[in-house]
Image (spheres, rainbow, N blue to C red):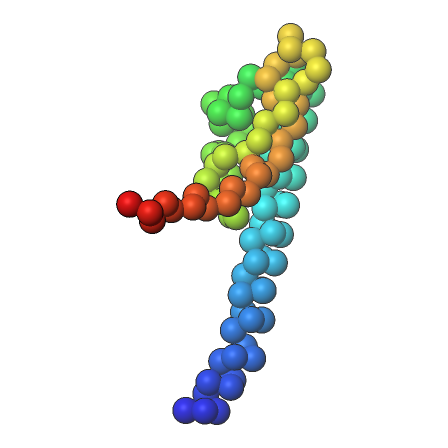
Length: 106
């Protein structure tokens, strides 16, 4: 049992580190995919999409990819400086939100 515990204590941190690195890489790829679709939309139509869902409606994406860190499609949208050009100029991953502290004083 001691040997198994020792092996697990060596392997577990590497496993969780590999999971985090994988999520980060998938997140970077999803951002690149969204930016590519936004650029193609702009090149075809001369304006930026009004929202990310328009990229799906106009068939530039099959679906809005999930952010593997938050496990939601909650990308932070950056609007162009000229609002007449559309609503989505760029995207970034949503900021990580710290878990809410539970008030246990009750």
